[in-house]
Amino acid sequence: MIYVSEKAKDRVVQLMEEKQFSPNDYFLRVSVESGGCSGLSYKMDFDREKKPMDQEFEDKGVKVVTDLKSFLYLVNTTLEFSDGLNGKGFYFNNPNASRSCACGESFSV
Image (cartoon, rainbow, N blue to C red; front, side, top):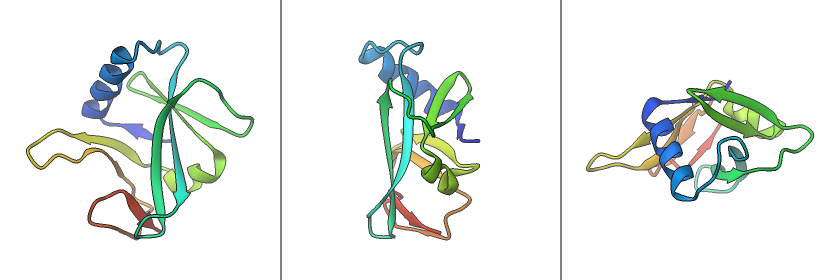
């Protein structure tokens, strides 16, 4: 499962409304790619096309889709959002990461 915090849900809904994306047609795609200072980096975008091996989850009304390979790195991860003075925007609270970089955009297992 991939989880979505309440603040992240609110921001995803707001972004979808701004882009005039219907939650019935679009979903949040998250994935992991090679790169970043720690070896792997997160990618997140809105999408409307599912692929054959995609894994689909829904938390707090937000549909999250990821490819099977990325899911192996993202099991039990929570998508978070920070809007405080030192806010990072979206970030992943990933219990599978053995180390992450200071910016929080890349990690290793």
